[in-house]
Image (cartoon, rainbow, N blue to C red):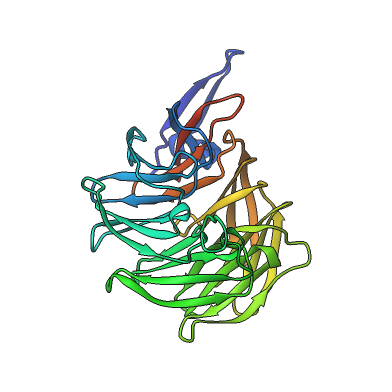
Length: 353
């Protein structure tokens, strides 16, 4: 029996009609789609100054981002990107996390030298956990960078260091289950940035920016057991990892370079240019993509193999340094501050698959 093919008809300007199998046309169209498509811009005319990091409340469909200069946490509808509320009563909010088990929003407030815990129903303060007090050595802004490990429900909070007028930094470990600080990790550097937990190796990797190093922490002993670097790395800020292949992604700010480390050896296996002045990076394991956001824009890379990567896109985002990808809604969010040419805004992108 002869197989019948269905065709689509395309009429070009010259009047030429082209026939192509429907399946082939759909495939070629999909291949031409960019990695992301902007679907919503939510303007924030009343907010000035930088934004920091995101958190998500899946139960209520809420997206949060800290507005450090505005002294607030801004709340959006996760699906539509609509601005819902400005949550005040904070000093200098930086990193955020959401604990679904206790239903609590965690705010690392640098201006208050504390971890602030809020009730997400009405945002009243549940608790204030004192961290390293920068005011004891002069007005500081600590804590800043933090990482929430959903598996263990531990919140690793970087504080101390230069922002508290101290030579070294501390990562305080807050247990959501116990509701208290259960340990500290001493970091030999005064500028702790992004960090991530490696469950396979039972380690925490942390950018020590002033030393141009990555600190390797044994989570059993809570000690720095090694440091990794590479000759041209500078102002290493954004960091995340692919736990399946054991690849750690680190982005330098000046110049903007993405480095891929093999966590088994601590050696760089790949590097390439990325956006400068980056602040956030998200790994998408389903699509094997890496999203890096900086003031220069958004860089998107595809993992071809553990040691080989292809840049898919490099585009401007109006100076949006911070971003997050939420797989459940298949959307990437970038927020940019007010500039001379634009007011502040949240950019919502659909991730094309």
